[in-house]
Image 1 (cartoon, rainbow, N blue to C red):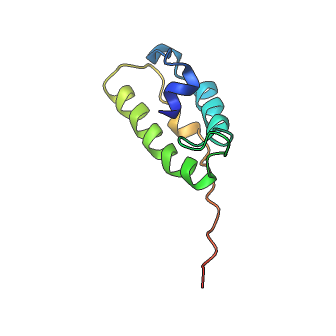
Image 2: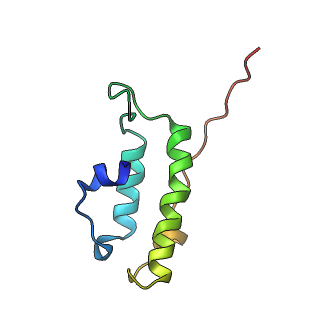
Length: 86
């Protein structure tokens, strides 16, 4: 959902590169929540989406749908530790 929104559903495999990855990462850190558009997506939600996105790009590379696999060049999104509630 977020990748489609970010690319306006107009991304081809040929457009996938490190720059696109970095812009999508920045988007996730500022994107609105799905149900609550006035609230920002929580960082830990972005953290959970990131590996799925990376895995799908790796699969596309493995299946030769894209020429570049920039996964090794990408930074991780850092998780924010949760405070335990009493």
